[in-house]
Image 1 (cartoon, rainbow, N blue to C red):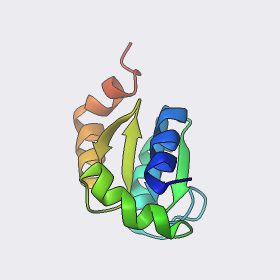
Image 2 (cartoon, rainbow, N blue to C red):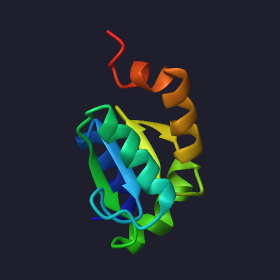
Image 3 (cartoon, one colour):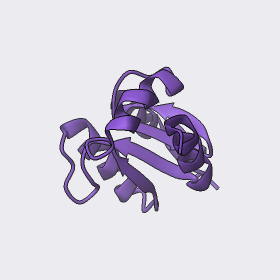
Image 4 (cartoon, rainbow, N blue to C red):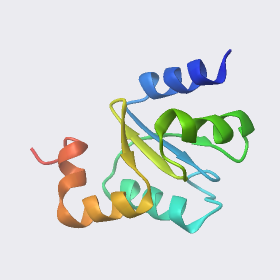
Length: 103
């Protein structure tokens, strides 16, 4: 499967998806660990793709998303951003709104 098609399918098939280095149980970078920690503290179920195990995605996703770094958090098909943006959104309450937890 073409890598861009694979990325589009992953994003479409998972309402909350994080492209990260490592896994939620064993993150391979502090930025990925922080985003996982925030989502876990919110009791959010999410899918993940380890970009260290998927060279094709690691090299193609930044061009597709127009976002150069990892992690990348996607919610309902939209790129939310990386670690700094997720932390800021969490701190100001906006992340809960995006995730539908503010009801």
